[in-house]
Amino acid sequence: MVPHLVTALTGPINELEQRVLDSMPAIERWFRLEWMEHTPPFYTSVDVRNAGFKLAPVDTKLFPGGWNFLTPAMLPLAVQAAQAAIEKICPEARNLLVIPENHSRNTFYLANVAQLVHIFQMAGLNVRVGSIDPAIKSPKTIELPNGGTVCLEPVVRTKRRLGLKNFDPCTILLNNDLAAGTPGILEDLHEQYLLPPLHAGSSVRRKSNHLHGYEELSKRFGKLLGIDPWLINPMHSKADGVNFAEGMGLDVLTSHVDAMLTKVRRKYKEYGINEKPFVIVKGDASGSGMGVMTVRDVKDLDALGKKPKGKMSSTRTGLEINEVIVQEGVLTNERVHNGVAEPVVYMMDRYVVGGFYRVHAERSPDESLASPGASFVPLAFSESAHLPQPGAKPGASAPNRFYMYGVVGRLAMVAASYEMEATNPDAEVYE
Image 1 (cartoon, one colour):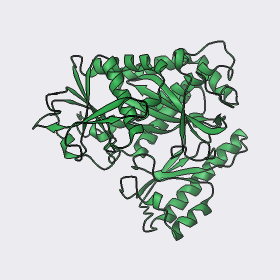
Image 2: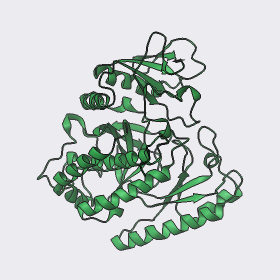
Image 3: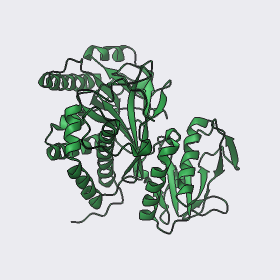
Image 4: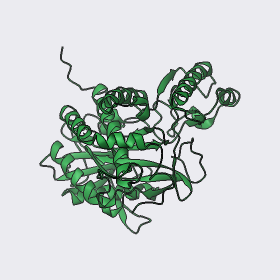
């Protein structure tokens, strides 16, 4: 199931690949020790960009959709990981309630929910889908494009618990990123496990916390491998007090963009890279998909002052953006069927379970591909292809390239676990 790739199986990233493969025992031990000290997020997806000269995560989601793009061959891995995750949290678990996003008309999204239900049923749980959408007042069965169905039922809240009529779960799995804020119906559930926790919600979570944690980790990991951490880390800075709707703070943003482009130019010169640097400007708390802009030159920002970009001034839930991340742009050197592509790695508990390529024929290598018009091609994780093959030449082996993607994806997952610990409002503090 290896997709037709123009660049993924060869390329100048070979030196980094060789270093990763040579260090495999040390890398796996490093991850093992991390997970002895820290709790992985319940499930994670990471967008990875392979520029040919660097390989870095550019977005980490803690409420991943898109599970329906995993191939049947990947499901056994997902089921095993689901069993491990549930055993750790609630070994006696019997009932699991999945809470999806409220857009119940999006059948492609609901196909992802149906796949999650399938994975957890195969892991040995009774699974039902409970909607917190006020429009769902009675059970509603929806036909899916793949011929399956998903039944949405209205949730029932008692004083201390959340469930459905005649269904009392011990664990509640959120597949809703709470971008519009935390609904009261999910608060004060002290008797049930709510996964991921409420402070992982998009309206609360700040990308800058995650990127800062990842930067620190990449330094330690770079030391382990003997590499420049820049090769796996997209540099970033945070600009506060920027209001696109009112055109305020654009001078602050301009200075951040200018400084970041200068830093990237310096790195490109150091490594002899003949590419045009660019940065990605996005909201620090913008949920997903909205408020992402590629800036190749400081002059590009002048247009924002004269004519505020609607897509930059608010998130997809209408929340104003006034904290902005300026992130080093990472080109993508991957092509699938002539379209620009980026790998997306899926993890459950601490395990890589699969992934896919996000492909966009109408985008350029320096633009975000997470936009309408994207298509999805399974990654070559089938038949355990993410197990590395020692001895194979760098760049010649798909499994080795995908092992690298899994390493970078897991690094982002460790950073997310640090982030969740640091922002946990209920954390116990020891003096």
